[in-house]
Image (cartoon, rainbow, N blue to C red; front, side, top):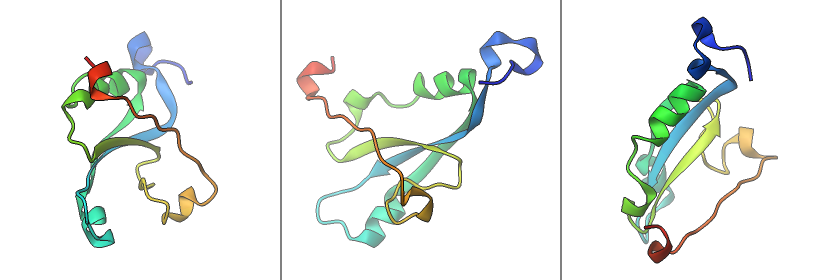
Length: 102
């Protein structure tokens, strides 16, 4: 983590930019449908911006069954395995039953 921007401790710069993505696929969707439904939401470069997004996007308990968020380092990296930047990467995911999200 880098020094705060402008002396404000809430604005600590992250080591790189991060892009939030939203994915809203549906059953039987083609690969083309998947790519069209994958939307970039916002790029963040500070801790303050990160929490600004997390605290203001639709909560996970309100997402549909086949909707998800992705957080990728660098705004040019898409959350798909076909992206060459992800060839040697991994993922961290978890599923929570709706009854445990309230």
